[in-house]
Structures are given as C-alpha cells and as structure tokens.
Amino acid sequence: MPWQVFDHTADLGLRVEAPTRAALFEEAGRALTSLFVEAPGVTVQERERLEFALTAVEPADLLFDWLHALLVAFEVRHMLLVRFAVELDEAVDGPRLRASAWGESVDRSRHRLAHEVKAITYHGLFLRPDGDGWAAEVIVDV
Image (cartoon, rainbow, N blue to C red; front, side, top):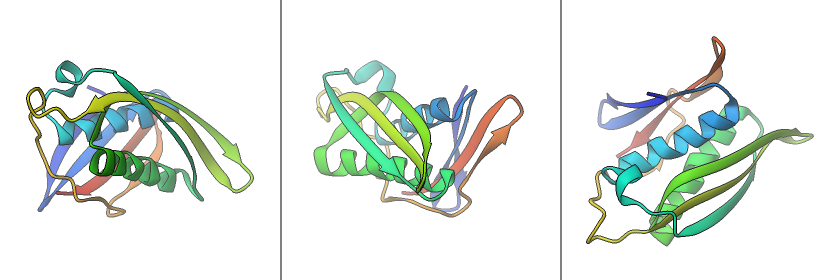
C-alpha cells in the first residue's frame, strides 16, 4: 500500500511512499481524504474539479501547505477529493505545486464521515528520498 495511517498519541499520522515526489503528493491527498470519510475510493464520485497553485520555501513545507489546502477545501467547501493530478517544479522562490483534484461535496446519505481532522501539523513532518522513490510522514490533529 502506498500509504498507511498510524496512531500518534491523540493524533493520527500518515506515512506515504511513492516512486516520485508528485506521486507522493497525490497519495498524500488520498490518504488525507481517507481520514475524512470511510471508503472514499468507493463512495466518492468525481463530479467537480478544484485547482490548486502553491509555492513554499522547502519541499516539506509544500507538502504541509498542500495537505492544509485540501483540509480547507473539506472544511469550507465540504469537498471530498479522491483523484489528484500534481505537477511539481522548482521556482526561484522555492518548490511550486500546480494540481487538479476531483471529487464531490459531502452527501451524508452516501458518505460516512470518519475523523474530524482539526489541523495538519509540523510535528514529525518529513519528505525525503527513500530507495528508488520518496517517503513522507505527517501528523494530523484529530
């Protein structure tokens, strides 16, 4: 499995692995959505597309900002996002992300909500090369 959830005191952690950094960001998006709703790959349909553009100082900061943007989309727009197309490149001011994400608004008749994610945290956050691919961990406050 390219990602897994692990317990961390009163929080939950996400451990993500992928062959490329862009794929890691996509997997991290799916992992975060799995905390919002049970069986997102089965119950959530790709009805709407959201666009994201982010720049950060460091790659790990960009991962934090990406997950925070997805959390805001869930909290403010009530969007459950299940498919992601992420492009990463290096800009003069730091790594840059452009992404599309597909999903739909929460429908309580079809979506069983799982966890209330309060925040993405910097505690234990890392993003680094790992063998032939990339690995990351992030702790979320629930």
